Image (tube, rainbow, N blue to C red; front, top):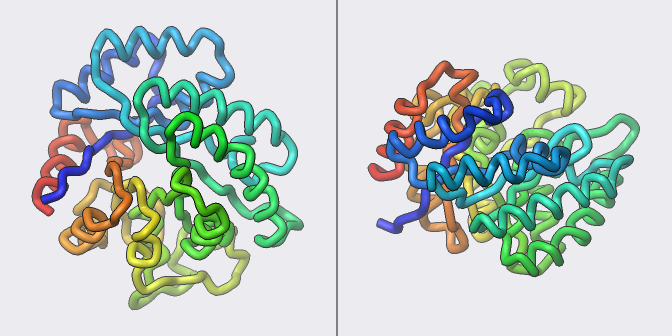
Amino acid sequence: MKQIPLTHFYMWGLIRNELIANIMQEFADNGAEYLVFNENFGIRLATDESFEEIFLNAQKSVGIPFFECHGPYSRIYDLNEMEARQQMIAAHKKVMAFVADLGCKTYTVHIGHTRAGKTVEELREYTLDSLEQLLPTAEKLNLIIAVENATVPTNTPDEVLFYLNHFQTPSIGCCLDTGHANILTAGPGKVIEKFSAGIQKEWQGREITLYDDVVAKLAPHIVTTHLHDNNGFVDSHMLPGTGTIDWSKLLPQLRNCPRIVSMQNETSPYANHLSIRKMCETVNQLVKTY
């Protein structure tokens, strides 16, 4: 069986600086080999000059490596941000340089949400410009920018493919989010009224684009993946095996993706009341089984 590194997310935004090392140690004590430098760490790094030293001291005291990064998103950090663009670009470049030094391999980004008065096609121009500015930095740092699929019109699997096909470079790929893919997978009872209010708002009453097999569609470009589960209608970041995803089918698909370099556990322990031990044991066993 192809061995792919497994990395773990955490809700670092809820953790005081003094406790960062404690949580890192908790992961290490429960069998985690790698962690994800997440979007909250990135925002803190970009906005607080003291955070770099705080983070490095914590990480070095525990010794657990960070293998992947999820770049900042939302607020002003999405790629289709229209107003604070140079601030957004500068923040991403700063975080990219830092995590490359940490040894991270991929840098996941969000395209962004729909925006009032703008069509999907109009918003593409902002995302294209952002990627044109960021890809040279990624190439220089030996990072892969991983564009994440989501559940809104601006970042469906088709939209992700648009960018991957536009930029013919190994410095860009796809972060396959399993929960988002499950929501946009066709199946019985997939009617707009069942989707979460947030998803319905983004689609503005239009028919939601559904797919027979999101993984197969994106497989040639997948470099990393967010592992979490849901009921097919709400992006709840449940523990794998507690929702409707067939992991016995999905994980072999992911292992066979030609460019894949990691899998990332993106379960939400906060929203689902999970201990680090339970999360690590469950996801570690899952990827070993399939």
